[in-house]
Length: 313
Image (cartoon, rainbow, N blue to C red; front, side, top):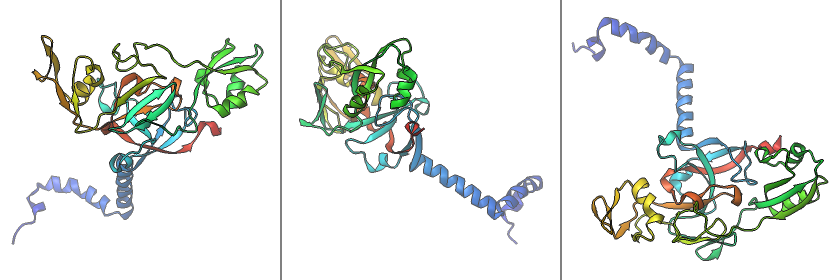
């Protein structure tokens, strides 16, 4: 008679496994374990939830909004204009799961050419459809007697923008909201702020060769996998993070010549796809204008419907 595999185990080990075996004969327990496993798979690969934490997407999304995250979209493909959720690409000194989540709008796909002209977005040379919630900076002057907290609550404005003791505030407003606020009895005036001028050093790619600002930016082509980039000292600031951080090569120089992994560098074939993201609150968002191209393989998914809005309180 051939012994069963379980008979080869020591008797005390077989006895220790019996309670576990009895537990899994329980139908309710089996159903519970299967349900937990199914929920975990759904959370990892299908849908999840994200709480919006900043004003960068105001007034499309407000701080505190509970947003459905459609994880499957990162597999099925993203579309121009999608709201996307991703880990902060600048926090690469942290493990990816520990990096803060960011929510922005994907305005340009791999291979697109993106440009801002006087604050207006153009993609591939054509005016892009702007989201209805998009806001620009306005200066709002309140009466000295105004209750600032009540004013913010009345209009659903982000409380973190309150400035107690000040009667002139910079606020993200779209045209419709600006008209409503202008008629508030606590308000003396509402005026759109002037567009950005000059070429500040904190605008990507941080080089005087690219004299751009947050309202006049580009044109620049968004890299896509397979692109062959001609690399020079002048345009390296556009691509050095892609080459050295996202795609893991060692950049250097030998005399006046650029090198990659110890070999002369004059051209580079892009390995992955990239996107360009903006916040809907254009003057309140740290986005691709400030830190560059977004690796598409770091996108967790598409931001779906708002399940619970702080503005509904």
